Image 1 (tube, each protein chain N blue to C red):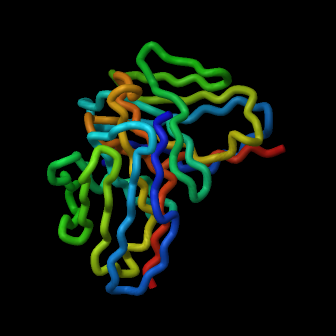
Image 2 (spheres, each protein chain N blue to C red):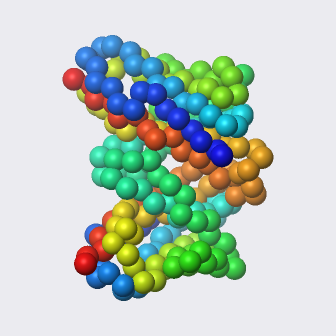
Image 3 (cartoon, one colour):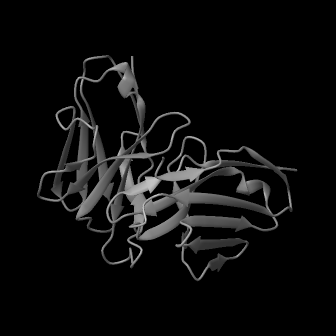
Length: 108
Length: 119
């Protein structure tokens, strides 16, 4: 089983819609959790950290369920500029473990 | 703040040659840097953890004699791909943590990556 699993997509979503991604991780010792965004042929950029209490940053909401080892990301009122690959990332203490990413395409 | 640079941004070399990639933290001191590799349509994979002044720690399956890592200062880590072959062609990305700004999440700041093509 992969350490971090995501649906690769692609998700084709009309502009303005709400879209949700999920991810599961296998190592219960994982300490911190993130969503990164990666544009084509670029380095990943931190979108937000993820906490059990849930956190929101503008149109983005992330949630962690430690019991189920499940992480989610919700994007509201999607923009064309949200088109990217979204990487679910966990940290066991040291280097990061990345999911393969979910490819999102926002269509006008 | 917390800017990480890499050089070169891309390199094309002949099979059998060695290639050195530099990773620098520009505005902070990084006691720990990480090296990742990403093949097309694949996830980033951690190759090694580079600690200033000590030997790097390699992930399982990564040959330490092929991927030489040197972290001689608090702002510079280098990755040398020795005797590169076409299967080493990949996107190599470094990251660093800033003990001051990383916070409890230990946020890592990524360099822009180096695209290596071995002919």
